[in-house]
Image 1 (cartoon, rainbow, N blue to C red):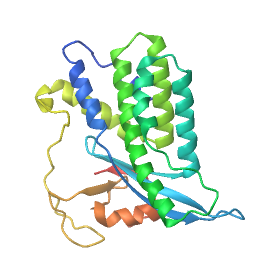
Image 2 (tube, rainbow, N blue to C red):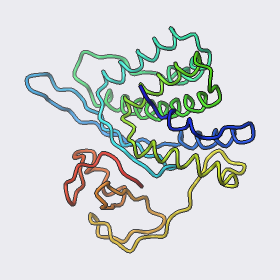
Image 3 (tube, rainbow, N blue to C red):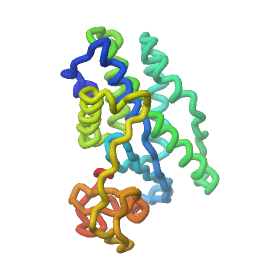
Length: 257
């Protein structure tokens, strides 16, 4: 079992730089989540609602897509609640508390109504963002307690479970390590702030293939793994329905912004 925590094991941790690692991990919490919902029918089963969530991390300039049902969020929350109850680690107990404090939508045996779907969308957006924050807390706590197996193992397991559920791509994990290394080697980037903002790259000369307007420096872009780029607002609706590039149709579930 491996998680993002193994990627930070080789980083030099001292009393002088541990606060910088915390700053870098705090940056990873500042994710945005955009979701939509669609009714799906598979075979002879009753229709169910599938939630498509696009997670964007400004610190790493990475985005990815996950698709989940209500039952999957419910099972994860139940699992983490049982883990917290069974675990003797006060560290993990405190880290998981904010997640379990979030009001979770009640189960329903009726067909999903618009009001029910809207409530769940809002809850799942918040849960997803909180899961990313909990994951960052687990990583930082494990760095703080290196060598203490009783504390680190439960943290590692919680991190692994969350990463698997959120389908955090390798691109995001790699960029997290790069971002942390950058903050460690350039402390001035973290001067008096808990949110690191990288410089905005120069605007590109290309046009958005969807709206045919030029890319501007202050506009949010999404770059596909295939190399094609689009305005975030233009390509969002497409990605919610088809997890592929609108131009070349290559499968695209993550990329950079």
